Length: 223
Ligand code: ADP
Image: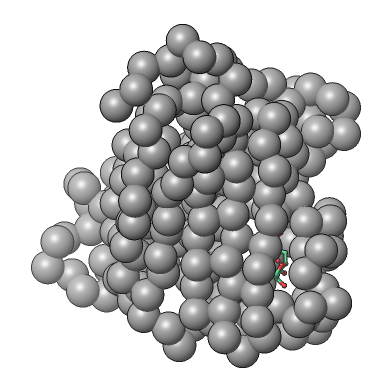
């Protein structure tokens, strides 16, 4: 019920913005297009926050649902990177390596984890130009990591960033806005798939967030 009530007005706003963009505001009107662009960013942000809060309440109620489908992680990473490149052109995101086997899991939820890690990498490395995603295999799992060259995380905080509402910098510091639940949700999603999440970081040099996903079935296709 709450989910429907929160999502319906947002979907309408997204629709009306699209109509304004395609039919009402003249393509040549730079000011109109600029405000429309800002409006879209804010609506998308609000929509992300609503989805995260709804996920938290589903996790608490033990009702976060997962699809079981064959997922090609190589293709999923490429798709997420292409979409994010369209929203920010500051960072060059490169993909190194590939995985040899598909896994069974929830494509959208795993995409959500990747989006969270990559948008964090962008947000917490405002001066950097590149982000490196690595894909690797072990005999029984695949591993994905996202490395940035940003502000890093002091050692004492590193384990805690996966806790709900934990942020390294205080709420008063609005440099890095966020609800601080993205990594908590990401970890829940990965653990549901039987995997693990980790972070390695040096303050002032950057962070690498990674996760593993075990091959739960031997039947899946090799690429
Ligand atoms: P949010 O970014 O909304 O605060 P997250 O749950 O994604 O929430 O992250 C929790 C905290 O972990 C952040 O507030 C930030 O302090 C820290 N963090 C996450 N990713 C990075 C990163 N790539 N570099 C530095 N700090 C990070």
